[in-house]
Image (cartoon, rainbow, N blue to C red; front, side, top):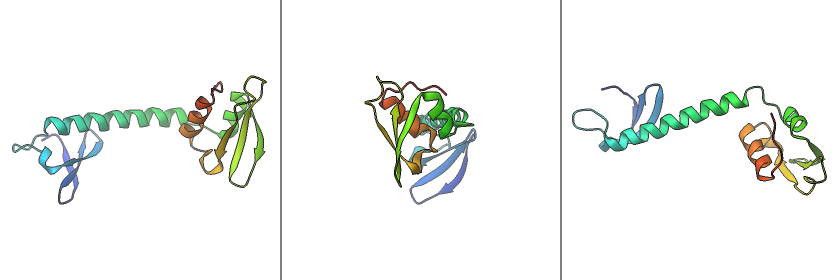
Length: 124
């Protein structure tokens, strides 16, 4: 048995394997105590998500909204109580308005996604 059960409910186990934790139904544990094919597929998904999260965290290190604005060549045109209007600084990108909720400007992935949706050159 190369996994550890961290927590259990009536129908499922929270499993830790190779420092990755994930939920599986109790039925996915074989009679010999090994993990079924479905459980291993769930483990692989959890591993991929963990790897993706590590990459995202690494990319977001040192992120600041101000730096992103400077490097992306956009301007803050208007600011309301709850949102910021960002527009392209050149004539081509001027029509691509991006409204960003103030509560989300510190979320690197969200801001990057909004910039890409608007086809703004994103350099950070």
